Image 1 (tube, rainbow, N blue to C red):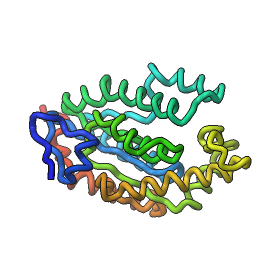
Image 2 (cartoon, rainbow, N blue to C red):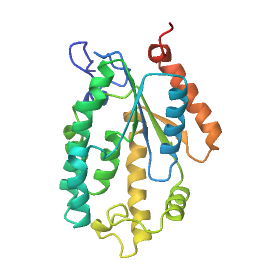
Image 3 (cartoon, one colour):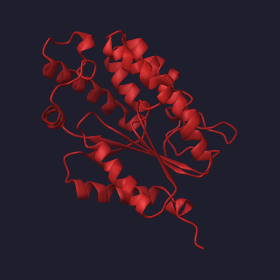
Image 4 (cartoon, one colour):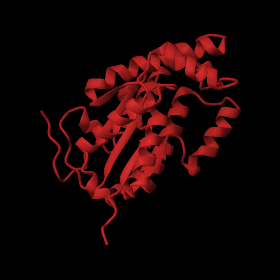
Length: 244
């Protein structure tokens, strides 16, 4: 079995070869949340973020598809419905690469605790559901550092879909997977698309060391579990404010 050496930064590709915690060249830590839309992951990461901020910890928050360099191009492509599965995937990869180079890696090297709302696993689940090759996707994101913890918030499909449909007046074209021609009905297309994504996430639980979280558990109880796991797996004292 291959091993990760101290000379080579641990990446997503190497994580599939060796499941043990990788050796790193930076003092920071990376915590990621993943899950289908409506799983509750963003709420839980926000609560964790606020808890750490109140405690004065050195943290940085980043979210999927938020690079100002790429966001406008993605928005125009969506508005004109010009995006194929491959071009959509490449735009997201460019967005992630920009944030990784300008935010994630510099802050990890600077000793920050980085919190990511969605990470490369979103591409592995969502883009594969659009028909992109899983192997191609793994290669595309092979530069990405391995998270210290990847929380996978799993909610039953009916629960997650109901949460999203109830909270939004209208599902967006690409959000609903209408570009795939699954169904002419937006709600039905969304459901089928999310089902495919959920299946892809489930296949990564063991291979990518996901920490499985029950998305149907009460918010406060789930947050308590999340904080406990973070405290057990990461030495938070490294990111605490320095005593005067």
